[in-house]
Amino acid sequence: MLAVLRTVIHRDLLLALRRRADVATVLLFFVIVVSLFPLGIGPEPNLLRAIAPGVIWVAALLSCMLALARLFAADFADGTLEQMLVSPTPLGLIVAGKVAAHWLASGLPLVLIAPVLAIQFDLDQSLLGVLALSLLIGTPVLSLIGAIGAALTLGLRGGGVLLALLVLPLYVPVLIIGAGALDAAAAGQSAQPHFLLLAALLVLAAAFTPWAIAASLRISSE
Amino acid sequence: MLDARDLAATRGDTTLFSGLGFSLAPGALLRVTGANGTGKTSLLRALCGLLMPSAGEVRWKGEDIRALREEYWGHLLYIGHANALKDDLTATENLAFACGIAGLPVPRERVHSALGRFGLAGRERLPVRALSQGQRRRAALARLAVSEAQPLWILDEPFAALDAAGVDLVQSLAGEHLARGGMVVLTTHQDARIKAPSVTDINLDR
Image (cartoon, rainbow over all chains, first blue to last red; front, side, top):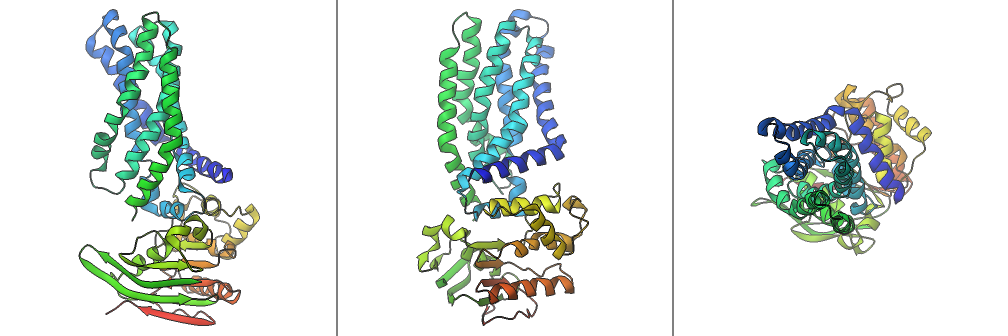
């Protein structure tokens, strides 16, 4: 069974490697959205420092959304999804592999580049680590929850907008806790409670969403 | 082994077929014919458990496939009319992946020999994007050459886009599979010349 998980992750990463443009689009979108705020607001360090956590987290949310629309669409169009549905391996496991590969290709780059972008907001250096860590724990949750929406809107016309309407409200807790970690650290408090809450969300999402995604895929492909 | 009882499927308000029943024993070939839009693919998808029939049930060894799920799928090879190939991957990678998720770890040499048998020798390293429509179909059907272990083959329009040699190859592979006690279900518009111990025909035209 784990061999199947490895096969799926390996194939999806290989596909991401062969279509680097898709990965780059999401990353560039994130970079541009985050960079627009300092340009629009102007050189006001105090204001920029105050909005940095929210802006970076919202931009990460939107970038995740952008990448999600493609998560199952190609497999659905070319028939690979049907092969996954008739696999003797539980579909939840295959789906977990797909989401893991999706996060590695589109979530992890955001985590790595966010501290660099945060410099534009004059964010204190001690907070860069907190930002990266909160995104590191938070973005997999976004991928997992978003994948349910991606599975439900599969094959629908205008699925992209519907996906945003379905998924963005579900992202709110992650946004509040994730951005809250930075606010707490900036106020001199410990960010640990926020990290623990994010980690708890991640554990819950990792345990339950693959089965919800699998069920949604079966409904969408009937 | 595979029994369908009183199957019916609808699309929108139209009933595609209803009251369909048959039983397949080892070595049996089921040919599904019918004009476009008569529900051939829906019937096959219902047999795979991909589509919930609006009435009736499909049983494998006496048990409902909806209850067996993964256990049933372990005995099934389904090739839909979509090729399930990724344009950016090579034929080898595609076939290895298809076998991987079907739970059949197939060694690389077998993958190569299966593709060679389907006339894709020398093209294994090309991305599927660079192959012709017929060659893509061959790359998808190459799974037949490594799927002896799955007793039930369900093939949707396997001969579409294939040349005469390709059709012969698929027919002989299906014949071999039936001879060793497998079961084959296929839809086709052509006269399939497959040697089979027993043949059932279903025509969905009314």
